[in-house]
Length: 465
Ligand code: FAD
Ligand code: NAD
Image (cartoon, rainbow, N blue to C red):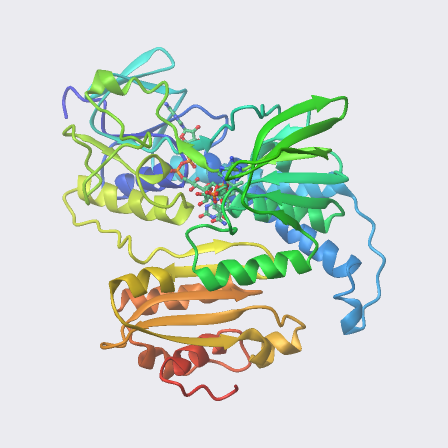
C-alpha cells in the first residue's frame, strides 16, 4: 500500500459506484470515489429513478383527483395544478437523497475526488489535475442518452428534450411526441399525459416494451391506449425541425414507404442509453470496449486488465439501478478477497406506470425455447383487493418448468406490481417451484394473493376463477 494513494478508487458515484465505495470502506479498504457531477448519486438519484418517480407519484394523485377515480370512491375534488410546487418536491427529493450519499461517504471515510477521472496508466488516473494511484480501480461511469440522428436535443429550449429535459418542463405541453415505446417513454409520457398533454408514442418495433413477456407487452399496449396514449408502431422518426415554438417530425414506416409529418410542442427522445466511456482514456489503461461500447468483465467484475474492475450500466446487462448496486457490493467484496456474486438470471425489472408492469426471469417465449413449460395466469379483476380498490387492470403470470415445476419467470401487471415482484424474485432465488408459492400463506386481502393464485393455476387449480 505504501506507494498507492488508495486500496480502491471508484470512478463514478451512481448506484453502482457509491454502493461499491461504501462496501469497500466497510470492509476496511482505503477508498476514494471520483465524481464529476456537483452531487453524488449518479443518473439514478439526480436525473433518473428518483426524480421520475417523484413526478410519477405526484401526477398519479393529480389524475386520480382530476380523472374521476376519487369520485368513484365518494371523494369529489376539483384539483388545480401547481406545477412549480410539483417540480419543487421533485427537486427536494433529489436534494435530500443526494445529500444523504454525501453523509454516507463522510460516515464511511470515503474521499470524494471532485472531477472527471481519466486514466494515465493501468493503476493511475488524473482527477482535477491531480494524479491518483490505486491498487484497484472500479469503473462505474454509467450511461447517457443515445442520440437520434436528425433529431437534435436541446433541453434548454424545452422543445426537443431527453429524459432530463422532460423532467424539467415548465409547462404542460399540448401535444407531446415520445420517440421510443420503452421504459422512459412510457413513464415520462404518463407523467405529462396525466397532467393534461396529448401523448403520441412512436415505436420502431411492432410492439412496445421490447424484452418483456409477449402477453405483458400486448396487454400494456391495450391499457395505455385506453388511457389515451396514441401509438404509432413500426414507425421511425427520421427528422425533427424546430419551427417557432413547435417541432415538426418526419415519420416513416420502419419497413420503408411514404413519409408523414407530425407536429408537437415537445418531443421526448427516449430510444435507449449508451455506456459512458468517452473521456476515460481507456487505451492508457490497456482497455477496449465491445461492439456496443461496453466494458466486458468476467463473472467477478474483473476486466481484462488486472486491478481494473467494472460494474453497472457501463458493462453488459440490463441498465437498472438495483443491478448496478448489487454488482457494486459483489465487486467490492471480491476486491476484499470475499466471494461476491450476482445472479444475473434473477434481476427484476419494473415500469412505474399505473398500473405498474414488472417481471423477473424468463419470458414465456424465452422459456419455451429452452424446453416444455407450464403457465398459470390470474387476472387482477378476480383479486378482491384490486377489485375493491378500483384497480381491475392486469394479471399475474407464472411460468414453470413442465417437468420440475421450478419457477422460470413471473410477470405482473398490477397497481403495485413493483412491490409484488420482490416475492417472486426471492422465491426464484431460493429455487422455488410453483407449488411452493401456491402453498405459501398470503395475507388477505392483498394484491399478492394474485401471485399465489397464478401459481395455483400452473397446475390448473386457482380458487377465484
Ligand atoms: P450512473 O447512475 O449513470 O452513474 C455514473 C456516474 O459516473 C455519473 O454520476 C457520472 O457523472 C459519473 N461519471 C461518468 N464518467 C466519469 C468520469 N470519467 N469520472 C468521474 N465520474 C464520472 N433504473 C431502475 O432500476 N429503476 C428506475 O426506476 C429507473 N428509472 C430511470 C429513469 C430515468 C429517467 C433514467 C434516465 C434512468 C432510470 N433508471 C432506472 C436507470 C438507472 O438510473 C441506471 O441503471 C443507474 O443509474 C446506473 O447506475 P451506474 O452507477 O452504473 O451509473
Ligand atoms: P428502452 O431500451 O427501454 O426503450 C427504447 C425504445 O425505443 C425501444 O422500444 C426501441 O425499440 C425504440 N427505438 C429505438 N430506436 C428507435 C427509433 N429510431 N424510432 C422509434 N423507436 C425507437 O430505452 P429507454 O426507455 O430510453 O430507457 C433507457 C434505459 O434506462 C433502459 O435500459 C432502462 O432499463 C433504464 N430505465 C429503467 C427504468 C425503470 O427501471 N423503471 C426507467 C427508466 C429507464
